[in-house]
Length: 360
Image (cartoon, rainbow, N blue to C red):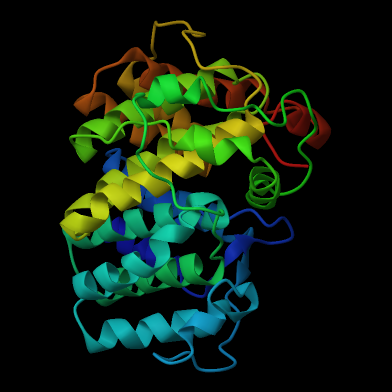
């Protein structure tokens, strides 16, 4: 059992869902777990102590959520503390795999919630539990599920695999509904508002063919996401790197999802990737990158050196996906992001926002 991760989770106990003042998600538990997966457990505690300083506090519970009234509390951010208390009780009553399987079925339609960070945080929590079960790690799963539930949002319609295209070809047909426009505000809200206003988007999403294998489909989707990121890296890299990390997170969850739910979960992750493309891409994915990657050791060292949670999580996801599907786009995407962060260290907030490295 990795003690560094548990030390990090102990330090992060009681922190809220967001960074103070900015609305950015709390990436602390996710990045700490990804550091362990990268073989850098030695960096976990120091990184966590630094990151902990920017986090707000978890709100207190105010009114109980139970089996009768949970639907009315779904998507109510102000009730995050109530959701944390609810899942703490659920996980005390029964084994975590059963709790996860039950609630994944209820939350999967809201994969877009908090920019997919409910899904992603849950995936990191479950991989930690696969390595070892203890109260801290079970508590983190409960907080991750609470985050997903409190921030719950849905796109209209149910995504279907009703077409003939693979993911890469389908992305090329997604309408770029905000091409060339300013995207002001938190991406989780911008994406929902813009995607809901596009009548063409649902039909474009449904053009993907029914996959024979969810595992193979995730490789195709993460590679397409990496290529999409690279085509738009000079404009919107921060948002579009999630077209890799969200489907890569779903892969971590697959062994714990009921078999009948795996295609459904894939469809909702694809819906989110397509919406992020529609709202934040200005170019169609292609071979817009230098195929000479950073050495793995250099990539990991640079990711740690940036102290950026996205660099840590993206590097880990890309290296993991590359092992399954050794395509150059993964390493190029991870290398591009860490390089951009290193080159922009002295930039102003306005310059970072203009380059899509930070949010306005």
